[in-house]
Amino acid sequence: MESSLEQIVGTLAVQARKASLTLMALSTAKKNAALLRIAELLDAERKYVQAENRKDILLGQEKGLSAAMLNRLELTDAVVASMIAGLREVCALNDPVGEIREMVKRPNGLMVGRMRVPLGVIAMIYESRPNVTIDAAALCLKSGNAVILRGGSESIHSNMALARILQQAFADEGIDPNAAQVVPVTDRSAVNILLAQEQYIDLVIPRGGEGLIRFVAQNSRIPVLKHYKGVCHIFVDRDADLDKATPIIINSKVQRPGVCNSLEGLLLHRSVAGEYLPLIAGILQREGVELRGCPRCLQILPEMRPAQESDWGCEHLDMILSVKVVDGLEEARAYIQQYGSQHTESIITENYSTAREFITTIDASAVMVNASTRFNDGGQLGLGTEIGISTTKLHAYGPMGLEELTTRKFVVFGQGQVRA
Image 1 (cartoon, rainbow, N blue to C red):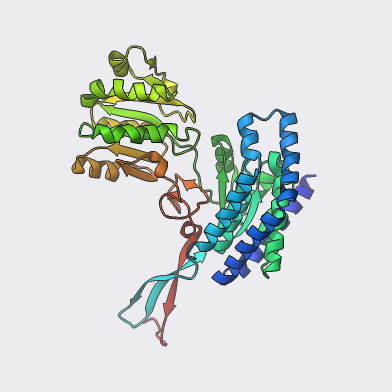
Image 2: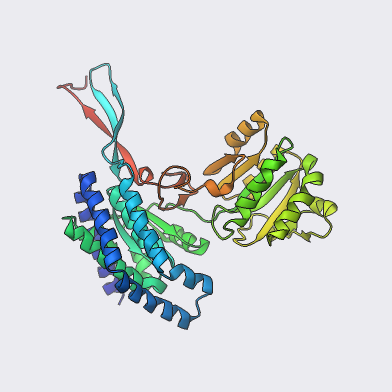
């Protein structure tokens, strides 16, 4: 069985590498035509896709998957419509491939610049949401990359149906169908085999829970774009406009508490905590948020639930918020360094110098001033759709849009120069 799996996955990798070489020079018009063809087929084959998705739903119910997991798994009409809209959105984005920047003339007359080029072959390993299959394939195609997609076993029927649509659309437009392939087996050993294909795969992007991402990072021979978790904080400075702070905090925590850019920790400067904590606590509690506070918080609001050590740096992904009173920016920064996850950090302040120090010294993929942590998102930051958020720094930091799915190579134009 193991040798059969190795053959299946190895063949996928070889085919993806071969396809990637044909994508490098693919015109923007050709890529856009394929994206629109995927959208057409997805709409035309909606009933087929949803029938295959229903198989996954029924199997998931038999296995006792949670309601939240089943909800993420289901391809409703609204989800399919969103997938189609996403394809058209990617179609409308600027194509970074082939763009030459920083062209300079050297003293010897050589013209030297840097061109955007695809990474090559990307392996996506993800859980539950089958819409990621279409999103990832669309972004990889537009950026000129071949992609191998390995969804969770709970969505295998859905993903295979979507793979059929992708490959039909590619074939219709004269593109190698192997530019987007789904691993057709659910055996977990296939992931380990995939992670060993360093000869053919250039980057692995895992999307899912922290356990999945750590497993991929620990077992891959290929560079991994990591995002373990989102432990995001807001620091309310002594010079904060508290009228601004309240809607920012509410939006960051309450709008979608189960996503990676939601607020998990609130830090209050001691000079504003006495006045502001009772106010913001009352509003948050009316919204259904449970507050867990440090000893200084309990002195102000004795009825608060005492925070445990495990609450600091916890990604609650729920209507729970850890709250701590700090002496100032230095203590807030030390806390974020210890408990943050390099995802998103925000400060509420009207002091320009404090804001500058915060954005300069806080290590996170996005640093906000007087803004919600929920803005760390590709669409909100002007990238269009994204393939994920990187909390590592090589080769991207933050949301990964089309440009982050490319790299740059040097291009040199000469007129017969030789090196002395």
